[in-house]
Image (cartoon, rainbow, N blue to C red; front, side, top):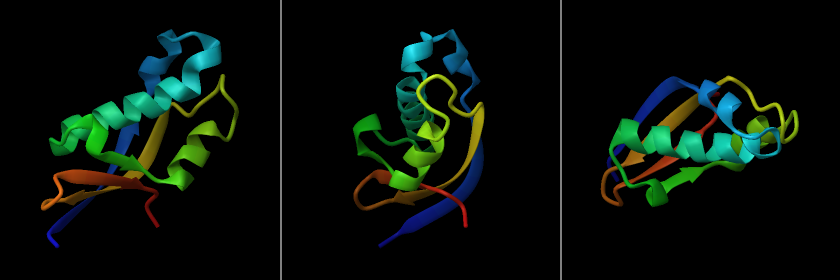
Length: 87
């Protein structure tokens, strides 16, 4: 199983232009979009860990973080990616 691992900080500052009541959901979608472009996999093949989701939603729907540090594992044979918290 060929995996490539990279730690990266992803900026989510573009969500300030989204309606206040939709920001955390938009942040998850934006994270998925940016990861798929970074590792060159389709968006539907990007899996976001529950801990990353918890960090985004921790302050509620209106105030997700402006940037988040994540670890991306790209699985070559499935052409998919996993987004985890760095540990």
